Image (cartoon, rainbow, N blue to C red):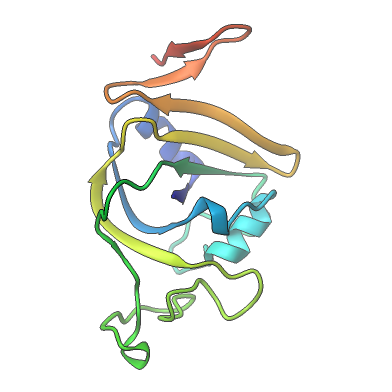
Length: 151
């Protein structure tokens, strides 16, 4: 699974001030996009109050393995047999939009960041690994060496 996180949230995760995942999430297998604009369009990140914009130079994604049947809900509107009501770009269909690309979306109540979760930075030039969570701290690669503990 993965969730787009705005650049301002990366530091709180890495320093332990943010330790949960909540809100809309997506399967990595459904959304292997290669640019921040593609993530913006596919994930419907243009919602009211969003920290994202279509022309962002970078977007960060928090990725983790879904374990068991954690509380991933398919957000369906009353028209689609559910009870979710939200403002657009929410579609209520279980997908991010009626356009292509559209990906399945899920919603999770707050869950702890799972062991092994990773943060990646996506730019037009590719994706960079930022850090991996070991259950206590985020480990970052040191230049020219293996992972090291973040400050």
